[in-house]
Amino acid sequence: MGLPISEDDFPGPDINNTHNLPQIAKAIMSGNISIQDDCAFLLRRLFEAAPDIKPAIQQVIDLGLASKLVCLLQQGHKPTAQQDTAVALGDIVGKGTCAQAKVVVDAGAIPALVNLLRSQTAHRELARDAALVLGIIASKSITCRDAVLASGAVPNLLMQMKMFNDLFTLNVVSGTLEKISEENIESGLFYKAKPSLQPLSDLLLYDGRGIENDADEILLQEMISNVCWALYNLCHNKSDEVIATVMNASTLLRLLELSVNHLQEAHDPASFIIGDLAERNEIWFQPI
Image 1 (cartoon, rainbow, N blue to C red):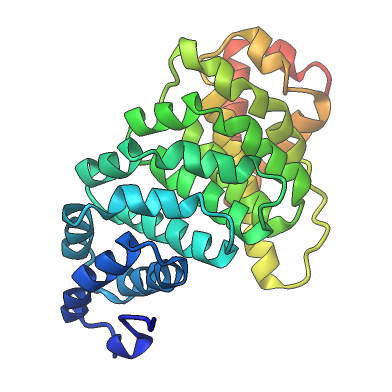
Image 2 (cartoon, rainbow, N blue to C red):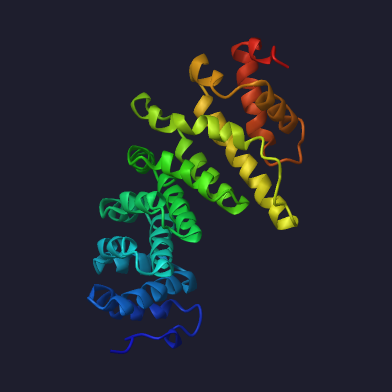
């Protein structure tokens, strides 16, 4: 059985290509795994090509594809197809409305993405995409963020940092943790985020191994900025006990170094942390 849609149906960035969506939907709804995989790729390509993605997103939702895409995300026979599906879901959430994002969340996307992080057999790129999409979901609204926190995403994100200790993965995971920490976390959920404090503090002292070019240096700067913002959000207005878990002499020295370097992306959040600590109690600076 041949693929009902070929890449030739995508001549360029033309929104009229959304006329293919009913055919893509029919193929994804079919029981043919090979066709489903190929059409997940075509859906991703369509989202990338469309200059105005919102009508396409609404059509995908109207066609009932959200829940089917979440099912495809959990089929482990072809990681590249899972990646295409994860990216497509990320586009729906990130570029769609809050109502459209809610459809994806209600379809079970969050636990499916967390399961990809939890899987010991997940490919590095797939796990990274899963972490990225969780960050996109968390940044959509406080309700979405709380749902990501409640799902147990944080320990699985931290596991990815240990399993794939490359700069690209560290940047993505730290960015997701930063998005999870945005806005005030209710006390009943803070314990879900708290385990990230020490790993984030350790990451602040990243020694730059693996830096080979300017692109790597940009990734490093972004990662350190993510870490500082996450630490600021997690420690702001928290108890001395919480702050004490991360604020050792090495961490404080690093924050001071970042706070006086205006060329660093992390200058602002590092300065905010130092200001917070100084305002609360100068005792934090006694070790240095």
